Image 1 (cartoon, rainbow, N blue to C red):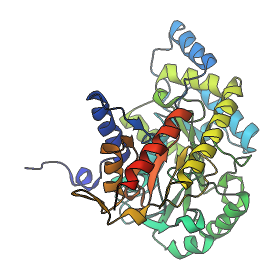
Image 2: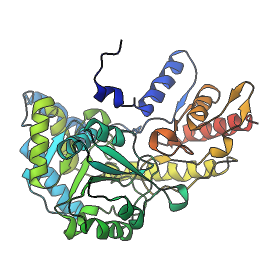
Image 3: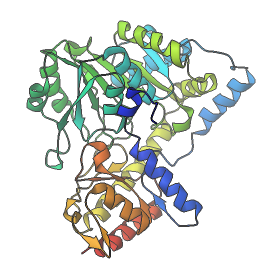
Length: 397
């Protein structure tokens, strides 16, 4: 008998984590699996950041921190937002959490209630609609296909806004597509949003530094939206610090205070040692960030070239993050032996069990005609995984 709450029963399990788990199980059985399912840099955390963490341990940073994070870290984030983004915030407009994932969820939980609608452009990161459901809100999915580079238009946004709309979750550079909104595209969305001051923008910018178009553009740069935008960011992707779990939200003080109230009841402040490491990440040399970005760009070029050589794949050129999101629905309805491919989830499972490459079906991201592959792996793995995928797909008739 299922005694779980309705809230939990409404949630879907994370498909990205499920695929990662499945590939780990196959690996444990001795199968040589190349894992393209996880969104995690394969680099190590830069040495100066690790040294700061060791120093913090020696200096006994082992007690509870303030719920919003140490003032020194919040001031480092204020300086980062000013220097890198030209944005003015104070330390009281910043709150740190256990990863950007918690930061997004804190803001959603603080703003959204029953009957509220949240616009979620698709393809979306798997957790966005689930977080909205967790807050008793209604996700309103706005679809943008490969033909528009997976980016919504101002007209689509305008059409989705109702008196019940509470927020828009915007992710640029995007997980799962790698699409990046240009300043001009953001200005178009900003013009719509400025007309609707009741709509808040949760701007997930965690992939800010992994972009191949030069400068990152934030929707927070438009003065008319200043009171509507909450920026979400963190150290996970730019500094290869996924396991350290430090993210932050920057926005209107009343929203930040609400996040602190919420977080004060269910996790308190994030890890003390990780905060000192994050402070070093923001205040120290940025050279490793650029080195990693260059490596990702080289890999992007490699995987796009190889994926375009796979018959039946439609591939756009992602401008940021470390994913490609090929359209692969030409394979739906095909079979290999007694195995039929009905959808992207079937295709992902086929590629894992037959091709020994782990990807994630696009259904989890609101794009059932696509499949997500992460190229946060070595050049050798990219070449070999594309060879395996090409071979496995050729067997489908």
